[in-house]
Image (cartoon, rainbow, N blue to C red; front, top):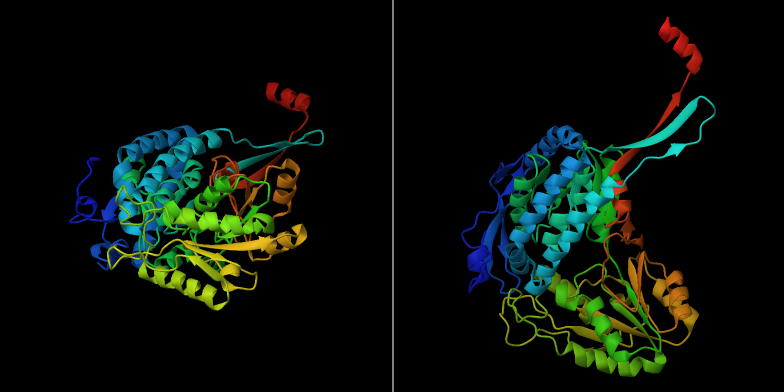
Length: 506
């Protein structure tokens, strides 16, 4: 596929294109022929249809993965790494197509989606290197005994992905399972399937048939993956309620399953009075992922907890800075902030804006629909609340949109109580020039990933994951690779070597 840009990217990348699922190396529409309509969040227009898998389609995908798995595992890490290298080249060749499909489908500015595709290199290169470095262990034995550990793939792995980074998740989240010898059945969010279905073409070219299978649809399709008896290991990125339901349905299936769940966040950015305010303002905006996906990110620092001495000045500067970003159609290179993914999501987020006002927070800016943009688009201005208190809904619940709540603090212990007083614990950031304060505060915050004087950046090789209701398991690291392997320990007893030699020699 050429990377030539068209005047209308929807016409070039979507119109008259056939989007199909991938099962056993074949591109299929699904047994029932049912489809769902894809709506462009930038305009509200219906732009194409995608398949909806049946229960039989899910079973066919799992069966194909099970047939392909033994030969895939037998290739060894070296053989599987060769497929990864081919896959990497294909992803690079399709960079513009995948980025545009994401921007058209989920409303994220295309500049950020290009970065997503570029960031795939770390994972495609990194997981094979990690897998090659894995070793078992030898344990002390008594005299004639030897004990050692070994690892084997689970078999078929299920992957269910969120809507906010569709191509990035499709291209990378299955890789640790694949490099360890598992095969995969993957389902994207029903709201953003286009780039995942396009990625299926790349998987089909780089990997043997059945190694990667992609099915699309809603909750019923996901449930078919979660409850299938042949799938013992699942990975999910999404909301807390869905993560809890997945755990429940896995248990109800009557089969013990292993889960990794990367779930929601209500993440705090703690600001001390010795900072450079302009730097921290930009950190708050980038940490909120405003220009990546309009705050629709589990790691966004939606709670900014600012020392009273600089609180008013910070709020004034942040409000002014938020007004400088250009909103518009996501697939325009002139757009900084795009629309929300769907009308349903827009209604949900604007409901939280109304709740903030009703609960007594001060709406400093935003909260409405910007002028001059397509009427059918799901646009919401970057929204800033001040004077937020811990009992408010916007202080406790994940909004998943471009809404920042700013809290005031002047007592250190009370600040920590506020920061840790939610059910989430995914990320946090600490902003201060005092080294001791920075590290002591980072240690006291109940979160799985903490930045000091930085925000939102992920660094491949460092384990990413949450505490509390923000999930279980770690990603982007050797921990994740190991999580897709089952461990066994082998005990061996040796007889007397001299006696065995005498018998051997007759």
